[in-house]
Amino acid sequence: MAKAAILDVDGTLVDTNFHHAIAWYRAFRQHEVLMPIWRIHRSIGMGGDQIVPELAGEEVEEEKGEDIRTAEKALYLALIEEVEPLTGARELIEDLKGRDLAVILASSAKPDEIEHYLELLDARDLADDWTTGADVEATKPEPDLVEAALEKAGTRDAVLVGDSTWDIEAAKRASIETVAVLTGGFGEDELRDTGAAQVYRSIEELRKDLDNTPLT
Image (cartoon, rainbow, N blue to C red):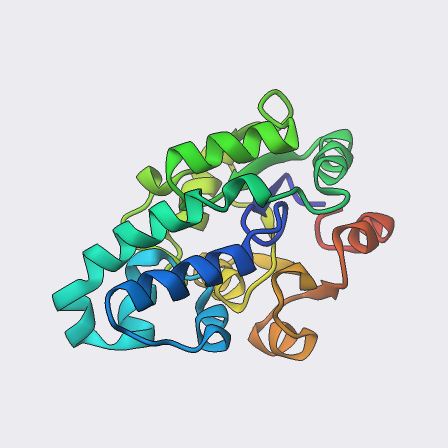
């Protein structure tokens, strides 16, 4: 049994991935970079510092990267009130706490976004701790975020719950396993191929099978 559960937030606990994709699309477009939304979605889960060069190249990153990220922040905040928790998200935290696991919410989002999600999930007094972008230097797929969460958990005997290939890659680089859910829009095969130990259609499906996962 693991001693800690590290729960990715965006796309795993709260339904944000497609809101972020729209915000990035609009931010790129404001700066005269036309980017298909399907391609943007494939990069959701990476940190914002890596999305611009990944999608548009180093030249755009050098010339417009910071402006695009600033635009995305404002555009996403205009959508954030539409974001809802995914079904069973808070209950999953309760389930894990009931099994005596430390629960760390892992995100490289801005502190104000994390505060909003904590309120949505009513998790401020339930989770043991959480991360923000201030806790990391390099974002996913680099392992910094997972390492920061492990430090807050006080143990390396942990399992990540995530929704993207980038989550799994970051966990692999930190030498921990991932249990994945399909709520971020990534396919089951690609999540398994990237290295997920198990893949579930939803948090509710994961909750029903929790005792058969590396978490417990």
